[in-house]
Length: 479
Image (cartoon, rainbow, N blue to C red; front, side, top):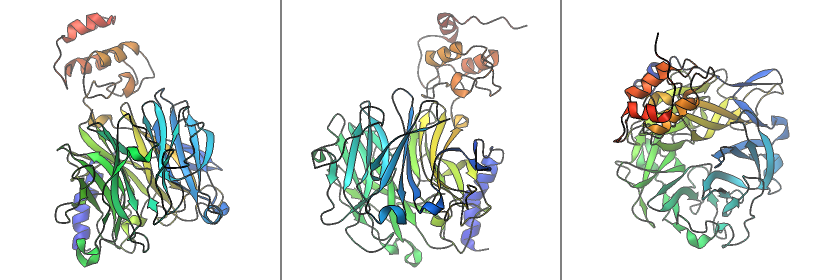
């Protein structure tokens, strides 16, 4: 066993074993042609179609409905220059999905801003950077036509690349990462990393609203053996110092530890990178991952495809090992811990993939969409990369929250007591309905937990006994 492998197991795999030994795997499955597929199947495209599912994205509408999307790639899509993105909706928290519309779109994320739904991606491989808006929950969309209506950067000289990566709002602006391909070359060394931002309240369809930073090319010598092969698919996030940064996926060679890079915004026009300080160890860093900050947990969370002792393959690059999906946490965006294995299948690393996940917070739950390569009763996926499913997954991150925080806002107050009151004596409750001890019933035990943590996260003028009286909750005397 190599020295690196020993270090890697110590830093990452033991964390998996200690933190995740009791995690329930495959909590949701869909029976598809007699095969139990992990998650709820939203979309399927058999390998025989030569149309493969990519770039899953998810957003939660103001009314609580979910919207998800994916695009297709492969010989039967790109050879005619059309890149189809399908949009789906769920009105029952992801249990069932219906197709809404299909667009000529590629590599897009979904996000809600000022009550409207947006899709930001590219018009095709190495083409324009574009944005669309829907005012009816994803049923219809604007069509990018020019610089005042959706075309943010034109590919007249070189093209652009992106994926379903997060946006973050900070200091009155909305930020997002992307890549250009001005350097040419092949994947992944062609990508230069950049960021863009626009004022809150501006017309996001107008290119003039957006300010773009410089674009940074990578240097192979940033890792020993010229092993910094490329970077892409950055995550805009605000660090502990209040600085917007982009945490970027790093591609490395076979058998090497997973890395990520931290690109730092200096101002609206400038990003910088220090290879001496800004390359970090990160489980899942070699694959596309998504990071968001949880106010309630006061942690940065990520969903990623990780390499562990169970699927480590020295003959494969970490970026092509994608059969374990995990939840990670960090206090500082530099040191990461594996909190939970969400789903895994170790039967065939060359044919199984849970990858390119996008996710959102929904109370104390996290809802996820995955580009999934899995058996389907029809011969399975073409390979781990050329996925045949988009699947939906729901997990709880309540173990990272303060007990009693029913609405996951980081504060234990009247809002949480009201949720408990509304679900009092419910026999089929969950964490979001104030079942804090996980026994399925909202009762005195949960009220005690809430009371024990009353006022956490803020200073309250009202005592718990006063709040209890104000809530009108009729609590029976204990026996």
